[in-house]
Amino acid sequence: MDSLVKSINQFAVDLSKKLAELAEGKNIFFSPWGISTSLAMVYLGTGGTTAAQMAQVLQFSRDQDIKSCPESEKKRKTELGLGKVEEIQSHFQTLISEISNPSKAYILKTANRIYGEKTYPFHAKYLEDMKTYFGAEPQSVNFVEASGQIRKEINSWVESQTEGKIQNLLPDDAVDSATRMVLVNALYFKGIWEHQFFVQNTTEKPFRINKSTSKPVLMMSMKEKLQVFHIEKPQAMGLQLYYESRALSLLILLPEDIEGLDQLEKAVTYEKLSEWTSADMMELYEVQLQLPKFRLEETYDLKSTLSSMGMSDAFNQSRADFSGMSMERNLFLSNVFHKSFVEINEQGTEAAAGAGSERLSCISTSTSEY
Image (cartoon, rainbow, N blue to C red; front, side, top):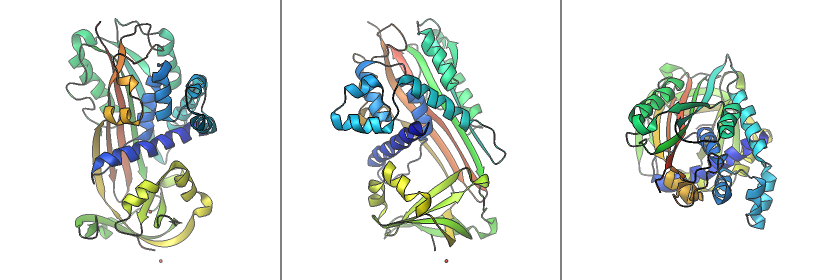
């Protein structure tokens, strides 16, 4: 299972960098778990070059995918350790079970669903595997005659699974009579800080965006002993803010230079994050922490982003290979929608994601101060 976690985290870094290129100073917030899970459900129904491209983007590897990669890439994929289809399925099954394991300290739940056109000949084994390993209960629906109603049903299910935080995941034109399958992942988290901020300490203060610009925000404040780590190149600091039970935490990174965010973002890799946040890098300091209180919602259509990362064939009507889903050769991936929500306040964090909804269509013919 560690290999799957590593793959998802590597994908998270890669996707974050790609989104940062397009963000132009805007916020970025997404659920790597949600997007990886929903794309994995698609990936396990692919073959040929489509599978090889998705494996590379998702940091997965199957025996046949590795064979088609350059030698340097073969070595890296082998080191990731995620190989055969059965291993990927089993790892997802285990991780989904662990995520869904009830806790008195926090709420964390994930759910998957498949909506398939009732008249389309999907492989029974594919649907059975999605139910067994991803807990994705297949829903037989009528896209051909009632696509608008089905879209509303999908959005309603996502809204219910995310405690009302993710609404209208699929836009009006996301589903039509040519849709043959929609694969959906929903994720919800609510956690209470181990050390909560006092509401009376929250005041409006300037948040520095760069050397010349600042913005007034509600700034939470606390003085507490926290786990802190220091980064030499580029110069930055970080801290680990635990939720109750310490099973989960929020990692905060802060560049030393007000203009150093771009350099820090570029320096981040999966290996660097693992190194920076390792136990031997952490030191207990009394910290005067100031953290903005905020609420953020983001919506993404990831088709062009994922294509530019290397999985273009899945979106190509003539080259897509979804032979693991059906004998029919007319399926392709038309959209990948993702909607995320997070609220950080004095008590804790609440976050949700309608994470990675894919539509398969049929074609005709971080005393320190922070």
